[in-house]
Amino acid sequence: MTDNYDLLVIGAGMAGVAAAKKAASTGWRVAIVDALPYGGTCALRGCDPKKILRRGAEVVDAARLMRGKGIDSGGLSINWGDLMQHKHGFTDPAPHSMEKDLQRHNVETLHGTATFTGPTQLDVAGTSYAASKFLIATGAVPRPLDFPGHEHLIDSSDFLNLEALPPRIVFVGGGFISFEFAHIAARAGSRPVILDRGATPLKSFDTDLVELLIKRGSEAGVEVRRRTSVTHITKTSSGYTIHTDTAGTPASLQADLIVHGAGRVSELARLDLEAAEVGYGEKGVEVASHLQSITNHVVYAAGDAANTAGLPLTPVAVIEAKVAASNMLKSTMTIPNYAATPTAVFTIPELVRVGMLEHEAHESGLNVDVRYTDTSGWYSNYRIGETAGVTKILVDKDTDLIIGAHLFGNGYAELTNTISVAMKHGLTTRQLKSTTAVYPSEGSDLASML
Image (cartoon, rainbow, N blue to C red):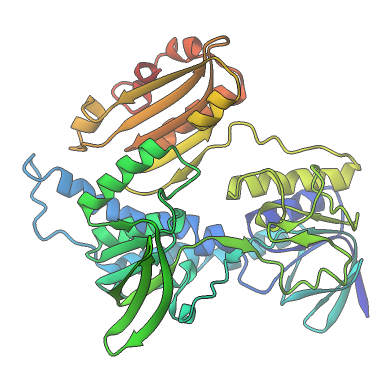
């Protein structure tokens, strides 16, 4: 027997949930399916639990910065087990509450691996389902690695569930996951090492600020080895030996734990997209700019599962999913607005970007003013004992509009939200500087950065 829906959403992360609720609110019969607990990577295995663990690292780091300035930080440490329980206090109830919320919004909730059996049909745990429209919002998984011994690595989900943190941790890859987790681990007493194949990690961020982040991380105990590839890994009686190649020179290092931080790819393997006549590649389902599959027009895709122009971020995935749902409901071809989307690496302090990189701005032909400010000695940093802080804001001289902003410092992720609003809505730097901010606050520093 086949059950029929107006929309069947594959993937119960934030994007899939947003689209399902939007479509159901109009009276469509909607179902959502996932083989994993409802909530997706961000809520259960990524952004949210990561930042809960980061809080412990923030507290330890903040106390150490104030050592000799009125705070005795001696003996202050992270109890990893207690911190992990605090994390579970958020993540464990989330799947149930999210599923109940979907049901309250008249979305039918299904569990199991979804596999297409035709252009308009799915199989879930032996039951066949048909739908007029499908949304693929399955997210991403760690990129497959092919060097001998790769099976010894754990992924980000495993790290976020570790019962104990060992002293020697190696992160393979120089991206978000490696840097964020390494900064947490260092404050928790481990000695993390990041191995990156390139000359500069975090390639989508301003290179000048990345160097400052690496320096600040080194002071906290995070080691970064560049131009270093893993050739193979062997298990030993006391852990693992990681054999590497650094610019042609072989070397090795010992580890108790090795974490995969070498990127992610779309999670499409189990869908059998060939049966659905849906075209796809390494970057996801091949969709038009309005998120409709190029080869099967009843299928849409959003987030990390689609090869869109958007950044691989949860807020972007949610926007895409809502636009996809609207396009299905109204038979329109609306394109998501990706303008001024900020992104951050939540190290300590954080590194943030919105808009163009400096070289992109110069190459664009715009009349660029690069406003570089060292904020390390400013009151906001002095107050907390921080000695690292830099901003680089790119302004079009002809229009006085911000075209890019790059910030490294405590609290600068929140500050970037204000810059993003200004960029998206066309506020000039003069208009931003004319506003009266709460003082003293990081927000009140913005006018001086401009």
